[in-house]
Structures are given as C-alpha cells and as structure tokens.
Length: 374
Image (cartoon, rainbow, N blue to C red; front, side):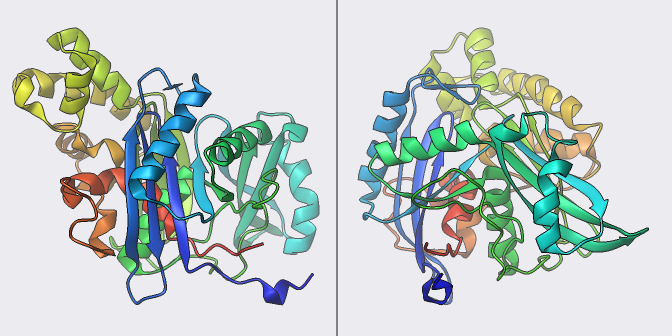
C-alpha cells in the first residue's frame, strides 16, 4: 500500500562483518560519482568467529561498535551480507511461466535443489532466461537459512543500528565490480525488511535483467575470488549474470596458522605478514607457504574454473595473485573498489587507500545499493 511513497536512499552504510575484521563504510550516491563520507574498521580477535560460526557474540557486537565509532557513523540504516554453507545460490531450469506463477511454484521447486528443510529457509529468485526452448526457462535461485539471517540482523541491532538490507556477500562483491567499473547495477540482490528481517523480499524491479558486458568482453567469464578470513568465495559471472558461486573452507586464517607453525611467529606477526608486511619473516619461506596453501584453493576450484580475473580480500597475501595467475594461465588483478569513488584525502587516516581497497569490496558493494526504504 502507498508504494508510490517509497523512495530510494541516496546514502547507505555498508557493514561487512568478516571473520577477522569488521568494516563500515558510508556512501553518498547523490553526485555523479559515489563519495565515501565515513569509514572505520576494527580487528576481531581470532576466537570471535571461527569457520563462519559466531563463538563470542558480545565480542563481535563490541567490535562492530568500535568500527562504527571510529567511522563516526550517523544513525542510519545498514546494509550487511551473509555467506557460507547456509547460503545456496544455484541456477535451475523449470517450466516456463509468468513471474507471478513462478513465485507460487518456487518453494516446491526449491525442495529439489536446497539441502535444508523448506520451512527453515527464506528464498528468492531471478529469471535469467525466460525461454530456453522446450517450454522451459532458466532461473537463479537464492536460499538462506532463516536462523542465520535473523542472527546476523540481531548482531547489527544489538550494536545499535537498523538492518535495512541483508545481502549475499558474493553479490555485493559483484555489485562493486560491475557498478564501479561499468556504472551498472547487478540484477541479483537480497533485500530484507528493516523491521522484520525474516525473508528475502522480491528482487528490485527497477534493476535490469542483466548488467552490461564485463570489461573482459561480451560472452567471457570472470571469476571474482574473495579470500576471506575463514573461507574463499568464488563467484563466476558472465555478461553480468552470476553463473556459479562456491565457498571453499580455506581462508587467510589457514595462511596465518601456517605462518605461525612453520616460521615460529606470534599470531599478531603472522597476521601482519598476511597483510603483506613481510619484513618480519623470511620472504622465500613465506612464498613457499603461500604456494602450498594456495594449492588447496587451486585444487578446490580446478573442477569448476577455467577463467580467473579478479582477486579480493586476501589479495595482500604475498605471491598469491601471481601463483593463481600462473596456475590458471590467465591474467589476475587485485580488486580496487575505491578507484572510482571520491573521498577526502585524510578519510583513511594513516592507512594508504590502495592498501585498504582490496579489503573493502563487500563493504563498497553493499553501500552502493540504492535500497528502497520500507
């Protein structure tokens, strides 16, 4: 009712709650170029989130507040993201029908593809191809466990903010890559009500069905690789359409553990090495460890990948980009989501924007959303 009174926000806070770091970033979207108005981040102790599971809830909430305080965030709604085994993204084929009819049939169809009880999930879909022949169409199905969405939203609420959007991290990554490099939105997003984050609301009808061709050219595949704290997400895109999303149980924590074990480093020193500060360690040995652990990423992706273009959050790991590029025999570049944003020279303090940028892909992708206020 009164849908015509709804408006899109021209500012939005992106909040990325990772396994190692909480990042907050606010964008003003009213100008020709998005402008970063607020930024803050805070490190999470290693025991707070393990393998995507929240082990110390109060510590995570405290760290969110710390990051928000450093950013001096205003009291505005937040867009955040979920990831991991409780999120399913899958292309499916079903009988051709209208979108309205598909909404009625999608839960029955999802039972064939989602390894969770249908009553325990919230889901949505996007029609990718309305007619693929033989009376069928192709959809992208997105499902997430309700309890995970609720728990994530409650973290944000208990930290003093209102969750307006709960997205999928891989889509936020794609949003940053597509929209900043091509100034085009991504078709697939997961909005959620500000008051009751208990479902995936319908996709935004103002979004186009597909984004323009990626930089590598129409018809070519791009893999967006996000090496996070506990997992590595690979998100394959072709002409703006997500083709494949997969989480591998390998992240920067595994590199840090090996740095500690093989180099005899403290956790803090090993963490700094993972950020590219190798002056406290033998660079040759660091490279050997990165290639050994990186080999597990390569083996995990090999059955599904034939292209690799862009690397994300763990891109500071010394030699990882070069190793993966050589292994796949394709170019690799480190994501730089800040490159097309405006910001004050002193916004990031003593940190170099180029060093921070690869860590902010999800955060930027979330803040780039023009969320519809309920």
